[in-house]
Image (cartoon, rainbow over all chains, first blue to last red; front, side, top):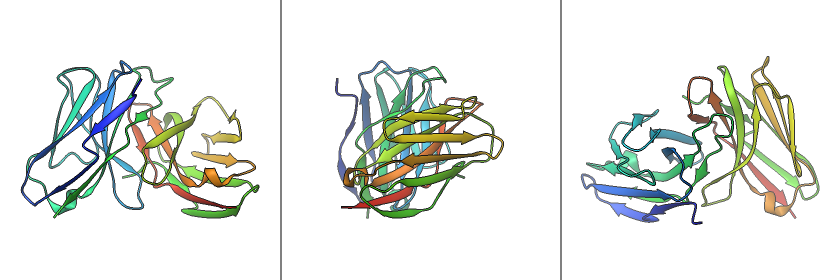
Length: 114
Length: 111
């Protein structure tokens, strides 16, 4: 099993450009999440999904959109990139039960916006 | 805002010593989890402790939870150079299936 994979691993954008980050998981998890991590800090939740076709806002949703058309995929979009969105983006997934809801993380996407 | 706050922010120890880090949080929780992040990598789950548990062990890891003080500690015994990483606590608030991460403790284990 590949676990959680993220595409691409690195990306450089110019201000105003758009892009989509792809997250895929092969563990049949119901829940999926997008986080950003800034230097020396913990993770902040951008958006999350509790199942196919559903999405919800996290702590820092502004400037991002997401879609969960298939259970195994969770896409994060930046419509008009800004330098403040320079960060490392992590995707994660977990089971539905709250008793064993450890999250499995992808390797991250390092995004630089010039 | 971050639910969990780790202390200390950084820790440097010699191989073989124990490493202890603490996490404080603000609201009621369903469980508390600890994760490790090696440099340039994603987070890896270490251990989960539920709100009705007080202590849990996993290999060289020992986690305690004091819900009355809203705090948890992670102890790594007999540390190794490979334990060099950042460690994050994450709380699962009773309301839903989201985790809120703290800022992390950077641990350096010197050989």
